[in-house]
Image: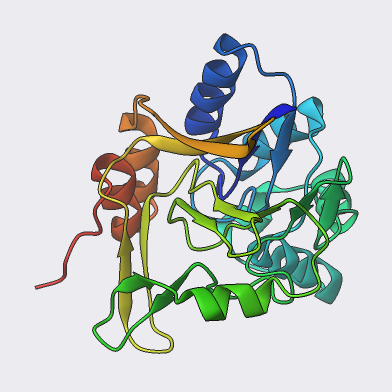
Length: 247
C-alpha cells in the first residue's frame, strides 16, 4: 500500500499543481487530503475547482469549517469567501471532520478530537513551535484503531512513532510554509523553505514508512497576489519560507 498525503493548501494552486505533478511522476495514484483547502488571500475558487475535479478522499479543516459557517450565517466580506460559489461551499460542507481510509489509516486535521488543535507541536511561551512530548501525543491518539494517524493544521512536517508502533504523520503544508498568530501567546511558525511539502506513506513487511517531500515551484505570482491584498506575512512566507519580522 502506497499513497500520498497533502494538507493545508490554503488556495495556493501553483503549489498544489507542483505537488500533484511530483506525485504523478513517482507513479503514485492514491492521494488523501487533510483540509484547509482554500482559505486565505490566494486563489480560493481555482484551487477548489482543481480539488473537486480530482475528487481525493478529503476531510474538512478548521478554516474550511469557518468558511462553511460564514456561508450558513449569510455571508462575509473576506476575499476567499467572495471568490467561492455555492457549489464550493456545498463541497466543503459535505466533508467529514475525520475519516478512516482503507481501514488502516485515520485522517484528522488538528488532532483526532479537535480540528484546531496543535498536536505534534505546541506553541511555547517563547512564541515558537516546539515538538510535543510523547505522552501528550499518545493521549491524543488513545482509542484510534489505525496503523497510521495523519494530522495537519500546524504546517510543520513531522513523523512520530508511538510506543505501541503506530505512526503519526503531519505532511506539512502544500501552500503556506509560515504564518503568525496571537494565541495562546503571540507566535510565529516558520518552516524555513518556500517549497511545497507533502508526505508519502508506504506499508511493507517491516511496517509503515513515511517520506516527507519538498517540491520547488515558482512562488512569484502567489507572493505578489498576497502582497497586493495587504497580506505581507503570507507574501514573505510563500516567497522565502520565513515570516517577515516586524520592526
